[in-house]
Length: 73
Image (cartoon, rainbow, N blue to C red):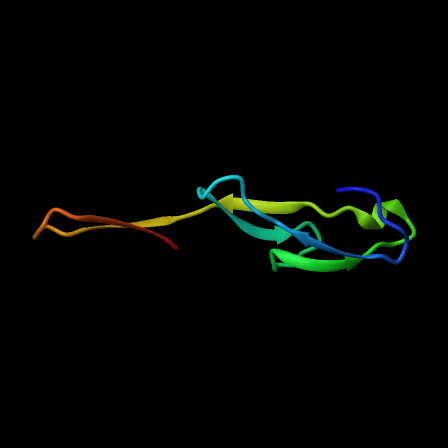
């Protein structure tokens, strides 16, 4: 957020608050977490909301040494 001049180029980066979430998309459908926008003259065109979803994890258990591996999908 902040105040920017009309026509300014601004980089937005969506970062989840914890590793339990991952970036899904921006409110306008863009699916890259980092993007550059140009500030529009009308305030309504300068609203971007990052959408996140719960991250899924794979848990693998190996019986030979009792190890457990957790990996984010």
